[in-house]
Image (cartoon, rainbow, N blue to C red):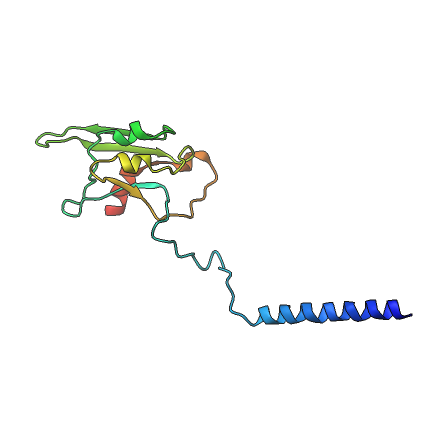
Length: 147
């Protein structure tokens, strides 16, 4: 008779100590982010996909299509095209395509760029239904942001 009562007492003690922990956590502030209504604050060193940098004086892309980033990319996910316009000393970028489905976010392209024309963006919530939505023309995207 002593053993079942002792087991019952231990079970009751275990239940009460568990409820004490639960009630202690219940009154602490929540840590959960309610996703669609709240967004996480991204740290400053977060690496999203790459983006072109705009020249603050002219408003155009700093990139002059030297293709160093394209050569440095181990995943072959960058394609750069450029044209030399009349009166300009350097080429102007006309197409900067990024296939984000292949990108490993290694940063080799950002390090290889001598003119600091590309950087990591702070976009973290990319979602899509097809692969084609992740093949982006960063030059057209930069122009659309400027308008």
